[in-house]
Image 1: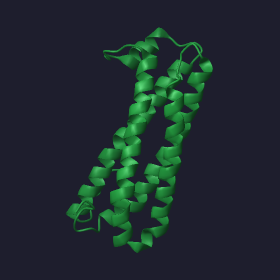
Image 2: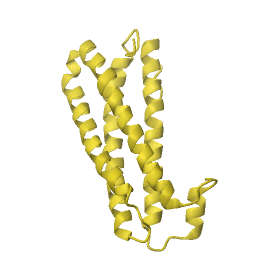
Image 3: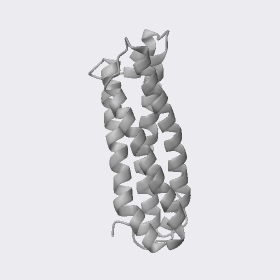
Image 4: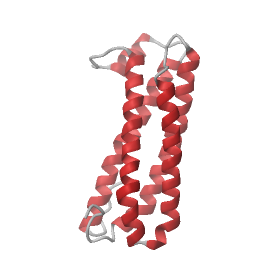
Length: 172
């Protein structure tokens, strides 16, 4: 989604802040997915791994993916925790007509949290010599990526029009 031209200054700033928070979530889950697909491939080419790592100081792909999964999951959980504790209550108070949509967002946050718990546990067990361990995490990341994309799209479609009507941001 692009930055809207209409709406209040505060609203446009809130849209921009959330877009900036969502962009790395989208790109990181895509990078994790790609890395796990490379690791999962039965005929992984060395060039693919070198390209994927491109300049990392720690060159062990499995280690990078373990750490990357843990970091991404922690970041995503923190993002949703902040939304649940700070943003969504303000939006629900200010716009009671959003009650159903905010309920859906909260339920989706809980679904993501459950997915994250499983991913974090299984990612710790990643082992390139155990194809099943790689495939399990890959399947989970693919499911998370699909779920997250739909969730972020819904959140942006739902909240951005309301952000654009606000005179001050939800932090105030």
